[in-house]
Image (tube, rainbow, N blue to C red):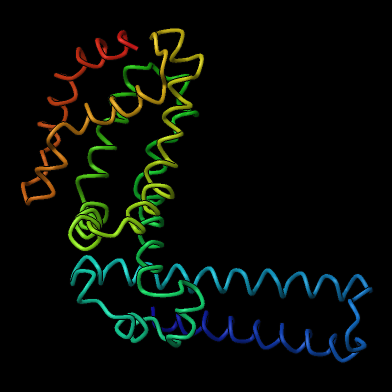
Length: 252
């Protein structure tokens, strides 16, 4: 395994060296202050831009993942930017350039984890050919697991404990996270697949009420330390609420 890692590292180093050699060679043929006109030069500059974007995005993602782990383990107040830099490498200047400050980093942590943990759960457009009842049951279980387990559960706790008197972070979190991905469910409730089977007059209100019906007290219980329901209990919860959901949809 170490041998393979070493070979990959050497190969990557060789590619980077070759890349910059070709780039510098091309730059030497350019007149200062003029844009590249030759196809080869334009191609090289396009690759430079792509390479830098990929490199930057990888660094940002690495910082966000490390910050997520530290925030969950230590809490927001006890996690410092110095700790994050010590693990990720680089400098605090780089971190400030990406996220402005610690609060800005935490907002990005919230947005990233909402996207990776919950966004795919709400993307129901590709399930319109499946039975509606199965789709809603599957959505309910996945959504409940997402909001009642880490990383989202611990991040919710931090928002409640450390930012309950600061509107900025909760507002940014809501707009870039839950509010944004809820639109997928709203669009699904407006689709022909749903409207042909259920009477949903107000999809926005139906979305809010449906999510509240799914969560019931489970999220609050999880936030204060109760164990998450087993798969059997979760299935039972879903089945019990089928009749409630049917009644709920007929009201809208």
